[in-house]
Image (cartoon, rainbow, N blue to C red; front, side, top):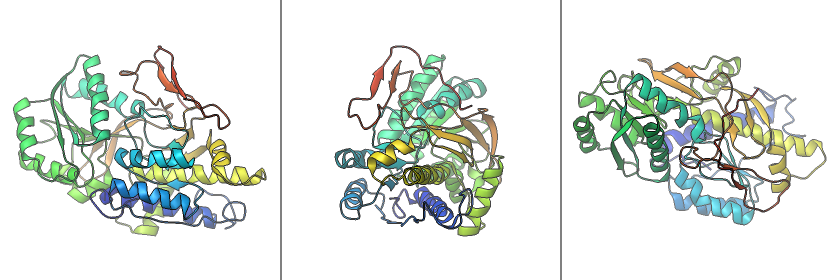
Length: 399
């Protein structure tokens, strides 16, 4: 369930492509999937594909149709938090499973969602101190006008102020906006040391182009972004992103054997000019989490349904392109690497910061919600899984 048209299609189409690559590999026993073309226990994944057209209401309607009419076992999809929030009541009411592959603002704990993108502590927690140390203490925050950018910026601002930094601007533009002169003039007037961008979709290329055209170069005011990936940089032209930064779990330049194979096989399937990016890598790896869970259920003689897939997905591990990752069995988020990339003139990232191993996900920002976490009981106990400890939760790493 990914939008291949509309303002978010610039990146969401790549998530669908990566999912299709994973499904092809699972069904044929190629790539990282072991088998003889027998799929999962002799069965092959059948794709049921919908296009919500970047329309939050359509996500809701289509998730109902997929669950009620098409009788799918689970759904891989959504991109923005607005789309996830739109479908969440459906999944919880119907007790269905969503695999959600996108970095997000956290502060959520659903037993019907497996979150395979970054939690705040895997993207924001390292990037703000990096900006403060390397660029300066004054940050100007921008974003698209909906829940993810606003909540992520709220967390990032709290992180910056905690270490003695200062927020000198906070501006939002309607989703799909391509005119940023007014905001850029405010940035010039505020004279920040860096810009923290949570713009998404078609707004990203427009902002970067106008930022440079206004005479602001990366050596003067660098941009640290979360949603900006290789996909948007290819669309805008790398000359507009060179010298700016992105905090993400994966970049195409990650040096692992699994990533080299992933890039090669993706380009063989979709074209040698295509680039890979962090959200598509999450869409790819979560398809294998799903398949491994299904295989576990079938190998144990079980039936594929919400309960069995939920329990079998807990604790799944996978040698992903970014490195070894794991579904946290307690909070249904994913151990992921934290990385920062500096964009080069060729549109690829020089990785200037990386954790040595995947970081344990913490669903709530500990700066804003100290000690609040998420623990799902087993099996299928319907209780509030939110836990308040009142103590700082120290990040741990996947061994």
